[in-house]
Length: 382
Image (tube, rainbow, N blue to C red; front, side):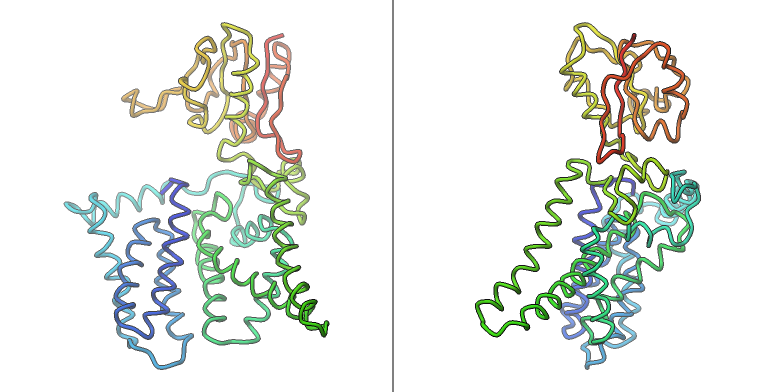
């Protein structure tokens, strides 16, 4: 799907699938539950099909006696398909046609042209790179330690976490639809968190072991997680509320990323709302505005804006217009309002010369940014 709100549910369902299947290795009741949960996870978002690879790998990782045999693994895709059919009305009357239509639509999209390391191509290391540059450095360090420890102590639980981290990342590195940062491998982040937790535990245990007194050991052990918590809180505050545009110190933060076209900035319309509401508070009475932004649906609804601040080229979605999205890309619209709003995505990918073209008639009065990376600009007529 393209509904970003499903990502949180995918994280929950994917984690529940792994948990239920792991329990199912020792209990047939839990195995049946895991089959149903896996089907619901795939129905949530199709990138959960990586479970079809991950779960059998987990089966072979655990060498202890199991309640299920190898042949039971064949049930995973078939039960998932049955669950998908039951919960998706589109498939009820034409299951093959419905699936093919969905598949063909996704195949036709291809990669979105977004900057990656200064260019517009998305190589196979796209996903792995995004995971590295969008993860806070301290978490990367503890993750590396957790991966090292788990690789050295190869019990079933540690190897499960490693497989959970690596298999979706590997599979989606070769999928043609590489875009939107690490979103399509978001299911790896519970494993990232647990492996980083192992790393934090190892550091805390090592440092606390250097002290003889129990009270001091406890204080030192608790200090490390507290330091990590404060660090992550500082990271969140530094980019609030634009968490989607966080990039770590390895690439110089959002400002350096924007200036060098390293990665996507403002891809989801960040800053458009803040620019619009700033205008709502500061625009002169009975003014007009035009939004040269992308995506257009990020513009606040008129009901949330002043009645005398009129959008003279409003976005009209095709489900209302009956034809196509009206004023969607704004590339052929003449700037003529009292105020203009431009955002980063529009400037980088829709009309790079827009701000220069209007310089003779408009002046910049407001910039919305995150750590030096501009997200939106507001102009007024000279």
